[in-house]
Image (cartoon, rainbow, N blue to C red):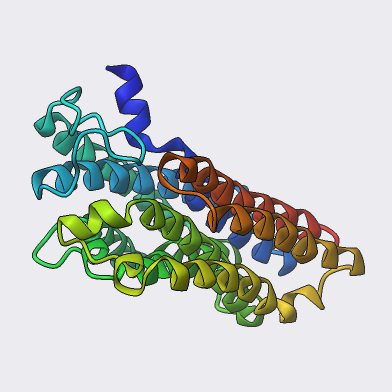
Length: 291
């Protein structure tokens, strides 16, 4: 039972939420505004929000008949009958409530309108898989990931530490880069599940455009992510140029395997894509210390 709950958290994908906060903190460091407390609050909030999204995805996909037993993706306790559906639903809202409590602590460091941002994030957590028009079922999951795992966490993690809107020439390219790399994790997930998703009418971008097109999208997203950060790289020490070079090497290695892999072979590549994003964010924040 405990193992099923841990699997439902999808630990392999949690680096996606962590990376945005790390990158946002790197931006704050570059702006000489690092503050540990709001950075930690953002980190805990991001992790809880993603776990809630993962729980909600498992519950609502089961409820809507999207999942089936023996799927190629990671095992889902609700579908396999190991977790009661109502327990998963309750867990989704409990974790979401915990995220909301943590989010309220951010008001000590920012203005009242951050509540609106928090509400939008909560709505995204549910709207990704639930509601009359689930984003993940209509080819909008990739865009949602770019916004909610890239632009929003990087921007507001930095904002809570700086207290102003300065440094957008650093924040904007960094947030776009993180968003593009985060979307690649979803591409691998949907790449693996294309036949299952198509069979139940779940129109992900891979179902809509096909594997060949989305494989190329995966490749270009990683390269574009490094390219859009050119205004940031030029502000960092010369040795920091090794960061995008290293990332592209790691990225190419996964992409070459992605083109040949199928079914459960794609599960490790999903994890490696998430880890590559985390490695990028850690190297970026390390380089920011030397500005």
